[in-house]
Image (spheres, rainbow, N blue to C red):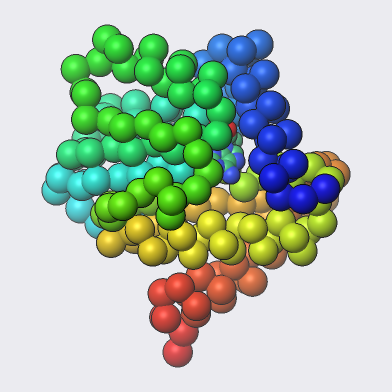
Length: 197
Ligand SMILES: C[S@@+](CC[C@H](N)C(=O)[O-])C[C@H]1O[C@@H](n2cnc3c(N)ncnc32)[C@H](O)[C@@H]1O
């Protein structure tokens, strides 16, 4: 299996999820809305001053819950960009925001930031996007995640945040990707941000 097959299977998984379960945490694989929101809360700590207008890219935006969270929690979003590989997710996203007064959002059906974006954003946020790897090896999937993080670091002006499942768990499911937090900390800080001392 190569990474293209993985993306196709992941796309099917989430498209079926949103079609069968509707726009809620279950469609995107979170146990509860509280857990989904806790992740948003932590990831958004990268934003230093939430009262200042910012542009934000949500990589793996799903049906748009992060945007709702941002708008309901006092973040000053001048432009929001959502990227996802699942068309049914983006259709649901649009449906949800039809009635919202917030119209400064732009959606892209892709996983390729570097090909689609010819602009930069203040922040990129990634929640849950790198959880499922199916049958590809850990090594190959890790390589893919690093490539994506490199693209992300290149389009974000002020910062980016992402989450991964940790390998420090007592039960693992075969199709999920469990990362070594230390490896990613060193890679991101050391290579992309040049922050290692
Ligand atoms: C676990 S869900 C999380 C959705 C949203 N971030 C949230 O927390 O509500 C992961 C989302 O990422 C999308 N996704 C998975 N792999 C992707 C990729 N390589 N590029 C873009 N989107 C991807 C899926 O279609 C799905 O909507």
